[in-house]
Length: 114
Length: 112
Image 1 (tube, rainbow over the protein chains, first blue to last red):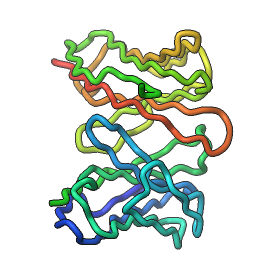
Image 2: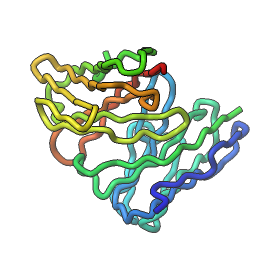
Image 3: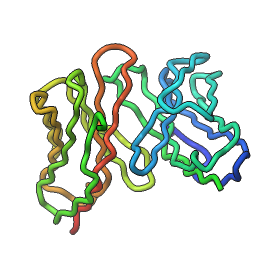
Image 4: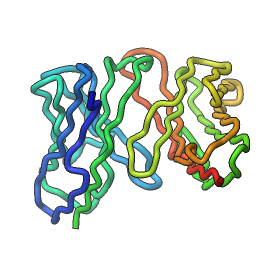
């Protein structure tokens, strides 16, 4: 049981490049989300999904796109990378969005935009 | 003013000490209170979750909520070097589609 997996672990991009951060879970969870974690800012929600085909914006969605074509996968796309997107990105999943359902986090992707 | 305030530390204690970690909050509507532990270069993992006021105990960990003071605490008894991590509090209101509000985390080092 792998839980929540994220690839890559590390990435360096140049300003203006695009890329996709991959996230997958094998727990058949409905709810998946993307956070970024920055010093002094804490964890901030970027986008989330309550099921395949359904996504919505979080607190800081600008510059990011998501899609959810399957229950298992929830990729995060950076359309045109900017230095302000340098951060650690975490994917998380839970059975539902209810607070009583434990949210499981992946190991993170450390992204640097030059 | 942030909705959730948490002293970033770092907090350094000797092995076996009792550790007290705290968060204060401003929104009296918060009903669900969580503590996450995050090891260096890892994702957060849920330690404990409490609904409304009161205490909850799980092994060496006790979570306490004081809604009248808008103050929550996590106590760690008999602290171990393996408890060295950043501890994040998070909370949310009752009802559907309520987002989690996170503290910035307190860095804890337990020295052998």
